[in-house]
Image 1 (tube, rainbow, N blue to C red):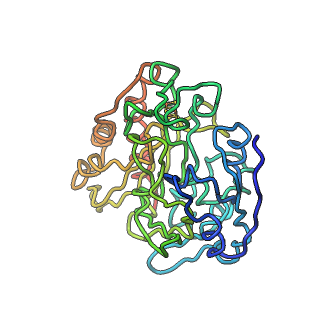
Image 2 (tube, protein in one colour):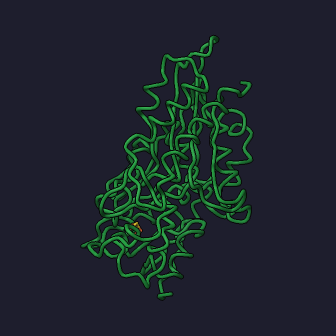
Length: 339
Ligand code: SF4
């Protein structure tokens, strides 16, 4: 582990100023100054040396300002430093946004959920073994232009949606699928001031693996706003994994549904995880389902549409079928909820 400078700040403005852009920095992921919240991802990765930083700016002093949950008539706003456990236990989250509670309840372990922040969880980096093990030279995400050891290597847990010839890493988080499905808006403070944008725009594509988000260096996520709607209560998350605790998804689906009395889909939101390069909204599958009755057959067809265009690399040849079945199961599960 390389030595780094540890700094504490008391305000968001101080944090942003401390992490202001440095010449040659292409994105916040590669910035020599990183924010430290729960530390459950970055500290691990600093120890492995697959992620390096010269300075960590501890933002936990901002929790009074950015560590609470506000329920409004229009939706629910999470401060970026809200802990996973805190959101998971909130009655309004459990009642009105169950898909969020379910992603949080299936993420990591209880100890990690006590520490990890919502924004940090959203920004967690891939678990690709070749990325994490610096003995492998070929990793475009860690060393741009070096190649991708996973293509032609061991890739059972790698992505099949949104991949490129440069990188097939899968996005590992759970919460992001719920937030993407529910059209969450990200609020930030950066060197250029305040901005908001849809969470589905946060993560960038696989053409430049070394750049992972649209955040500017020094730009801090301050809040996540989830709009309310008739679909949020009828929402759920299915996570398929190798063991039922403390494990990343091999496939997952977050679904929110609004159904007419006769079972016709009036609104549907689907996000796929575990097998996509970034949190993945299944727009075509949603379009397919709107106006149709939700049945076992239509759910199965929607699952196949969601995985349309999947690209496999050998060990993960099973992923499109698994992903399609996971989406179908989530849709049926949501339809059966009593709301
Ligand atoms: Fe690196 Fe991406 Fe290839 Fe993994 S899949 S080795 S992260 S370039």
